[in-house]
Image (tube, rainbow, N blue to C red; front, side, top):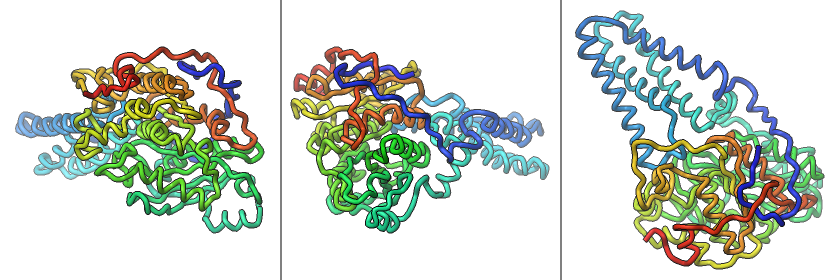
Length: 500
């Protein structure tokens, strides 16, 4: 069930919901539910117990405790590193740290228990290490929802073909001939980094059937940004949104926006937060490299009202940040569980890691500071998608007064509090003319939630960016005007910097 917390009641009729996404690569053995994840972990535990065994007194009272210390140290270090680096959007489940610890234990048993062990126990020790590591991966995947099924994981790891994927030469020929397919096409593109110098991976474009028609009206474009750990094709491979787009286009005479799936990292684990800094000039790539390429290569509209940005987690932060920074380029955004602003830990850590120590650069990319400096906006609208589930609180760690999200814990004992971020940013934005809503639905901070939230926003998004044949709709029913921001948000709206 979807609930609108903050919205503009005058935004027009609410859009009808789309049918659920039916993703071919999501059928098969689930890695999130059912028997397979439990079976993997049970087998790992049994094999580890066989590897440990009872053995002799020296093993039980000397070497086994040493192995246990190794496991505890591994789990403690992983927990510390995840927190200190700002990698966690929500507290990790205890099972993850248990399996990290058991993996360390298994390594210790293999190394310290090899001598004098029977051949079959040695074999169990060898098997226990990969099985415990696999179980750690299962626990990690259960936390983030990155691989819904075995098939999805295999497709990602082997870089298998995407839904609707074809060659650029094929779509070019079909466009020239005016051949309109029954579904959209997905093509890989190598976008020059002329303006940014950002060394990025291959990016991907979805073209709806209407794009292929002769003398077609220039279509709007939506930029799709994934989370912190990502590949440009994640929205397509994990969420299988090409199928969603095909369904949407089929219901609207072949019309849908053109979608470009961008690379905001340059590598899988490079957390850039879409800013310009030591980790790459990503903001320049997204604003100076991609729009001109899309306009010249695919003939999309250059009007800011016809450009939107969608992002999830880190990408959600990017979506709102780039829009408020560049309203002359983007008119609409969907922020799915993003944070208050770009962050890589506490404020001090963020300034050092993302901006090379420049507090001026931090302010230049902080959404609240940017909005206050810009003043009133015109023609900008945004959808903040958050979870309606009660947030899991961090325990045993105090909030940092200058924390800005994730590892910084937002100064409230709860990391990456996307609910507070959405409410605050929308309230500040509305004071400055941005038409926005905070829309809640059940789910945790994972890919299934991201895809469901995006699906709910798609009819609204397509209408707002001016897709031919798609009506402009309002936010979901139950809207109410937001309260004026208080605390740091109020100070930013008044033109002061809460970080000082």
